[in-house]
Image (cartoon, rainbow, N blue to C red):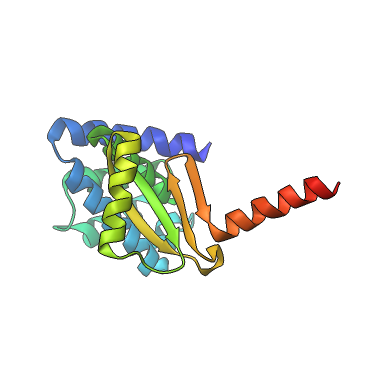
Length: 180
């Protein structure tokens, strides 16, 4: 249900942004709002609290975002307040970003490694992924010491496991099959 809600709201905002050629501006502003919620959890709690009436919350949003956000994002926040959907903002931002990437033909990929990839390694991996997908790839590198070595790539819904941990797990499964 929450995912469907996020898709509905993000799609509506996407259509407005596309019509006004403001997609990138909207994305940046949504990220600012999301980051503000993370940095100031009390602010987030005020906006989701049932104890504070919606009109008061709208005044707070006007004061906080006045001059910092477009009218569309300000109004979007008010719609979320009216519909009691502020709690879905994180998912909405994620869905909105996915729509923008899809519109621009960009695929998000995450490379999980034990150490940060160097620029040359990252560029090389990006080029390989672009040749596989036929699309532009935005590669994010995350660190996870538990992979032991190699790289785990998350490309959309696809996972490519080239980690030492993954290979050891596959070897363990193979050995269990031989022993049984």
